[in-house]
Length: 138
Length: 138
Length: 138
Image (cartoon, rainbow over all chains, first blue to last red; front, side):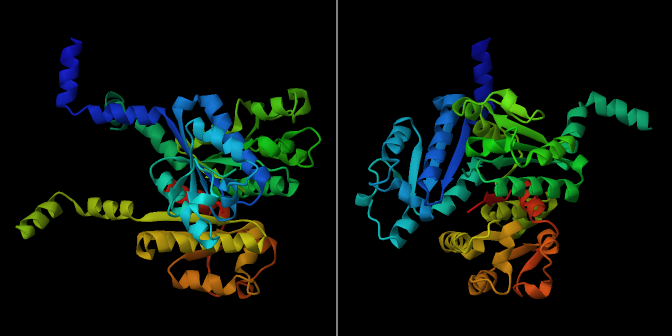
């Protein structure tokens, strides 16, 4: 019976539906860091940890995007350095804006070694929302 | 004629469609309060009142979520106390984050008597966006 | 062959589908300015320019909404005046909140000549999100 159901589902192209259901179950959140204030960086990192604690890290996909005055959070000498490492280890994507880095003459060698890079932070935030991600501006 | 339409609609399972249309007509907004600044609390409460004035209180569902440094807005001694009462009386849901309360050793007895509670403010904000609510970060 | 396809498409009512596809291709972003800080105004205007540079001005529709303490960005004597002119020239809609203007006794003669007006800034931001626009709060 089950085999017949699977065959029917395959014939009907059910696989994408299943995939969509799995996506729907998983929360996705893009978190903006655009201020030069370390207290705000800690708040953003608290928000990320609370989301993972509350939903379960496997049930929420999180991308933190630092740009403009917020880029400082991802510099090598940032006071939040160890917390950024922990977030990345916990599966959070933490992205630095290359536009901002260019403006501030920052090289990848100046940045936290575990971050990823996006061409423009603001475009990334808009792109994620268009893909259905929730937006959080701590 | 109308009765026949209703019978047909019921047979076709139209009730959920009607409900969805009603939901679509009603704006839903989750408002974030995450800063320790009373001027910002007043701005958030102004935003809420303007939304109700402009759309009609019956046409907009609003939830204010206070968390992190913003929890102060909902403490018994907050300068915004009477305005929070007015908002609740006007049908706004005003929610305090229990995560934050635990961290700040706040009990329900320390809080404005009319607020509701959510386990984690940040998760509530994400959940509302996933349900299609607009997000406002004053 | 192509003519036949067009006729068929017209018969099937394909035009709205094409229009929807074009809309889907074009990013739409509503940008909130609600603080009295000129540094924040410049950040918002940088964000707008970066979005246009990155996506191409033709591919992104942007509306900046200034309200509350942010209304200062659109006053005649604002330090960001020439940058607002440039944004409008580049196709960005820059809107002032008439609610705020009334509260602050501002007339249209007090405002940047190229701005548009919305009855309530906060309602505009909610309305845009309901229409599927991304939200940016710099």
